[in-house]
Image (tube, rainbow, N blue to C red; front, side, top):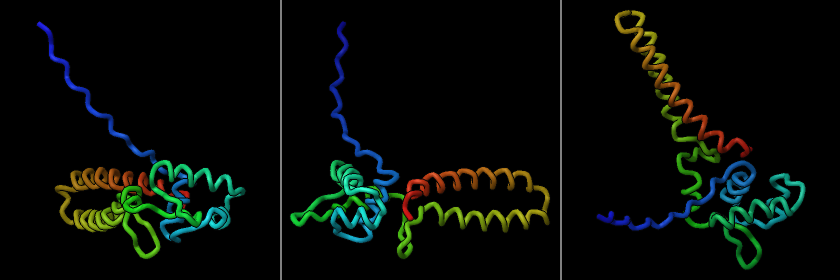
Length: 152
């Protein structure tokens, strides 16, 4: 008896992860707006225009940046949302969204840990749970924050 062949699933194209200097170029364009190649080179301190062009090319190839008829580069619609998922703007800063939870839970766990000294029956469980929670939360926050490590 022949087994039916499952239809092939269409391959979903995934955009490359943007990190390092390329992410720096993207963030520069997101903050500054339409910019020329020489502006990107000068403002980000790249040694040559070809280095800035390389990173802009990577962003254009991924569809995150477009070049207009005047030669200026700008962030494409919705690309900021896609690249900066998991971050929140606080003024001019980008902060991982988990940072707010990390701060909140750090305060709560500190408070409850202090209060648990008055009732020692659940200290071990509270401390173990708190340490595990904080470990996971801070790990995720720092992992996301590292993506912005090259952004001054």
